[in-house]
Picture 1 (cartoon, one colour):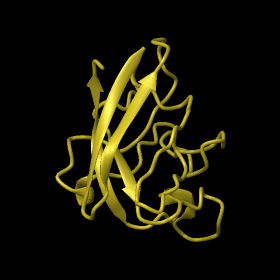
Picture 2: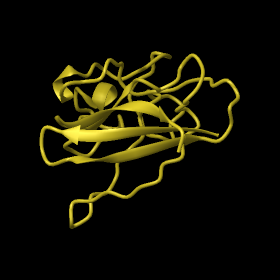
Picture 3: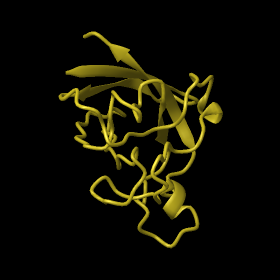
Picture 4: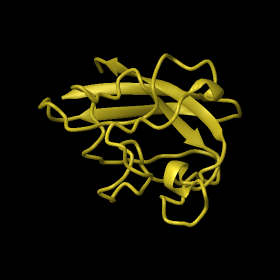
Length: 139
């Protein structure tokens, strides 16, 4: 098993920790996020990591950016607790997300399903409110 952690800090009050776990160490077919180096702010992150040249989509879509992980629900108290299982995001191999960035957006992702001009590239998810670099952990 391989574990990684991403500490999220934002241009707003958004903050937190995301833990990533890969149970098998077999070489991966793909992965995702945004390229490193560590961002000073959300403005310094790049576009989606998209090694296969796909359009934006939902986590269950076969055609999607590797890092299209869908939406999470923000609770009344402003917290998010979610578990996402995804076969495309890898922590080892040529398409590892280690050293890449996770970005949180302000609005709901349309999952590439609308006619909005940004739907097939970003899901029209609004501005970037927080981000963090994915790093390996021994925990």
